Length: 268
Image (tube, rainbow, N blue to C red; front, side, top):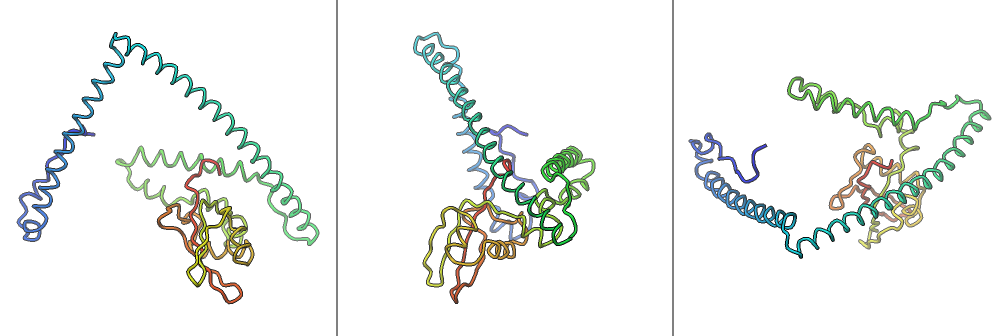
């Protein structure tokens, strides 16, 4: 990568183009944009040089004020390190607490599911550990991504192959539409309900269950409507300016629901 202070010249093909559209409209714009980039890059370089000189002075000056600053910076860095360690420790405890709570609920439901299937003499549910399966699949996907990235130039087809691989979410949700609807729990950061009179209300907490209580219908029905609108769980918008939208009708009233998913996969 070239230095950020150096703005590459415009392509010769662009500057010497004989295309009337380029010469009459885009050439002047391109030259002006290039000049602005060059000027801004020079100013950025001036800022970087000033910051570098200031940092060097703070690090090397024997002035008592600089010495006191370095001591204060060392103390601040140590304090921040301790705070971050405490934060991480508490977050780990919180994650474990809620993981245990969620596991107790899912384990109880799984046992009821097995008992019910046995009662009605249906096919048994697989005893495969889904959590481990998802983790193993994620590791394999990461390995495939590294392979495709490292060989992008030598074998660009690998990149397309990697893109074609099913995501962790699609695998975990099963191959059938019913299983997807049953298992997908969208994690929302915002949900806004708008009625047919254009009255809007933000739902708290931002869950499908809370939405269902507000406008009517079951949580699963809202889940199905949202899934129908986005196609697959991976398509749920995480952009607050472009939410995923679905509609439901209850007692003759039409409600439009706009939802935004959580932009995080680290704690799935």
